[in-house]
Length: 228
Image (cartoon, rainbow, N blue to C red; front, top):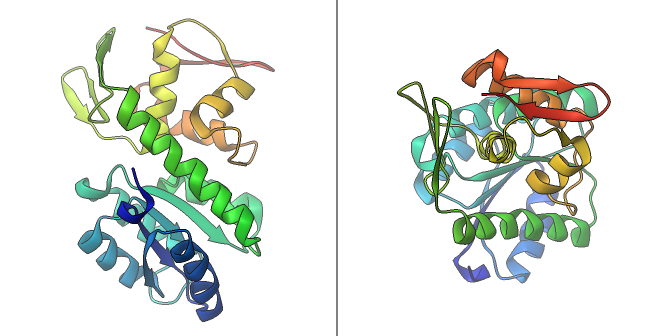
């Protein structure tokens, strides 16, 4: 996937952020669109269908959390990568952001080189999954379509946010195997993407709500496993 074919939507109510980050992304060859609040973000996301959305949390008219939830509920945008860019406190914003369907979280101020590195890491994982994961697998009553990022659980189709899907795909690749937390972080989020320690727990909780409590077992001090 060439950079000139990659669309990035940058959303922030601070003109300086839009100018600085937008300039650095454009200089790298990405096609950049901007919005200054959540309402504009949703409208532009539906119009442009970006590969990546960099989304501030605290904004007028509609905040980033609400905008993320709306974007995630839009079928055409279900596989768009969303990363929050915000100066808010770590605990609340990270948990709220991941609950809303975000893939990553970046705290500002952030150096341009660091931001570009994170963007490249996220987009590289998007490319890897498009190129390498194309099979349909069944684990118990769950059918996982890795090419279309769809789940069928007991005959009911479920659309999961990207990271929830990737976490489920990893755990179901070897049922009953305990995946260590560090392995999960590396396989699902990548070594170049820095996420909070509660990230896995938030995503497991969401999967339990959608797939079933009994399928996901916590091994204290080690990690998680999927049980049929």
